[in-house]
Image (tube, rainbow, N blue to C red):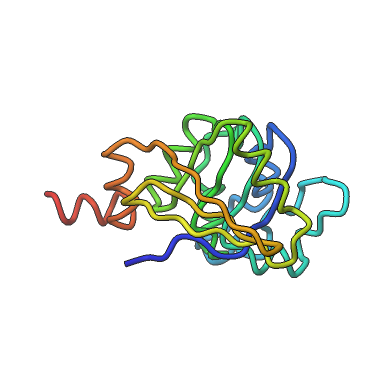
Length: 175
């Protein structure tokens, strides 16, 4: 079974759009793997380096509200998938982006602002990591010698998609 979690990349901003996740000029690439080097290339945040070690090591992204807004392209979740990102945690998601994450077998987890604020308190911890238990609907944030577990809600269908590895694998098993 797929493991969800690992080192965290903190993107402390709302309204990160799909053009910032994967610029439109790369949408003509032939394979998902061809998208890999362009992850978050156009995202502008103080101190953020899309080619830096934190981006390359990340397996979980933590952000603010309305993550994945903009175009409804599937390329945005795909660039996360080929870079080993297994989950995005945010206060809210653009509806189509969120469903595309589940369809690709990745977790798009919504948490209240207060929980996100606690998670963001680890943004300067070099050892910040998160583990997700999709079955139990919990995530555990650790870093700086501290650890805290949070509950999250996910529909039974979206949970089934994630646990199956995405829509295609789910359909293969069900139909």
